[in-house]
Length: 354
Ligand SMILES: Cc1ncc(COP(=O)(O)O)c(C=O)c1O
Image (tube, rainbow, N blue to C red):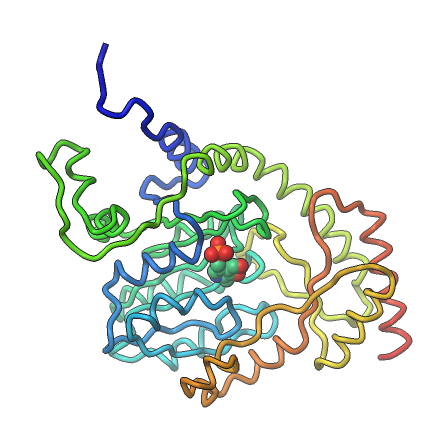
């Protein structure tokens, strides 16, 4: 019998790798403590620095930006398409310069921008495409899983996501040339990966790195959750489509699903014309014991954004979208009858006040 130094080595890594290979077709993936840490890794992998510009939406979570801004990059907040809530390709094109190091499309609600033209631009102009697929596990672009199209892609398994490990994330590395650096950063700045692979006889500190790895307990949980992904997506679809049909023809604005998109039904949202209409709807639902909510405060208007002068960005679509968006309850366990009840309250309020 072979005797190892540590009897209890990680045991779920291989199973999880197999699941990601089978379900998403990827074999270069790091399982991380969160999507935030995966994004931080990505910023370090591409050697983000003071001379770099990063194009990203302002309508997103803070950690889409954090790893890049921490390393001195200039954030170039770019406006969104008001029909989908994701980066507007034409606005991206206008903001590309010789300093553009990366573009970060955030797949809001599990819907991406049109990725082919963005990926082609990245190849032509020499910038990285890093997908923030925090909300997009199980969603697709032209049949290909979101998060696996770009040079890198990041997922979240936070408890608010379609599948969850409580906290957790993953970094998919599409560009194989980035792997040697990614391995060192993941191994806390050491060449331990080469040591384990038998390439080196010992391992040493070789670069900067961090402690990004998901615990083995959560890896076991993620294997199970990935096994439920298809069923969960199907359950969410039923509820999503029920909302969609209930609001058809009412004049209420829903997010558009482009032809190329295979959604994962992460969010069902309505977009109102102005904050007061939206807030009135939140209050009407709250009175009936239903929690519905807005979403991100645009980063360029946040207290930190103001301090950094980001409020100078002119992003009218982003601002209107953030003021108008209302997310409705959507989770397996919610019944179609409850969806109808929520829809009825909204439709009544809408007819009485619009
Ligand atoms: C677009 C986006 N990016 C990143 C994150 C961060 O994910 P995590 O909580 O796994 O760090 C979130 C969280 O909701 C998100 O919505």
